Length: 257
Image (tube, rainbow, N blue to C red):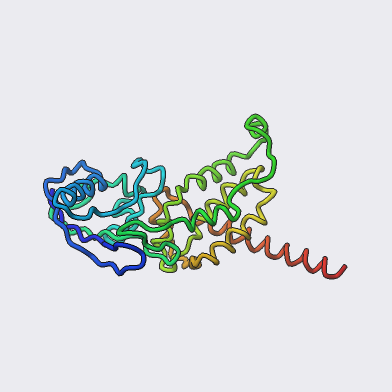
């Protein structure tokens, strides 16, 4: 298979970038998208050129680092897969493929197709964890959890933090990511104790880092490679509103004393 690639090239965050065209040929239809880029980079290196920088690690759809915007869609044209799971048989022979980095204020470009997604890590550091003593694994296994809640918590926990939801959103919102992290902890007994503080801290950090608000277009759910539901955003909003009202009520009581 032969392709024309139009790839965003940018030497650093301080410099302007632009689309550059490359031709690749004799690509197997069974090759992964990254194997195709590896072939391109080998050709560039052999000719003394600068290879295209892109993020990857496990190449198994687990780590979430393969953040590419392909033909106008995060992770490409196939639903429910990450870029590293995308194969060239998903494209037509001779097709022109546009490849860009995530576009968001909170995700500045480092080089070419690599963006700094540490903003998601900072949101987690703000409150996406359980800090109270919940005992060891045997203790956790003795706590009964209704199957409906455990299933919902597990579904939310499948989020890999790739940032596709941010890239897909017209407002560059991270609310699906945060909703998933809030849900998978708050739905379990070990995470309930800190649920109110957690959601307030994570939402405040999200706003501080420059992420937008939910646009209600469901683009995040449609492009999420793990199929995270927007139900988690609704759960996060309920939790945030409830925590806000509770904190204001507690403040009013303290002020009256």
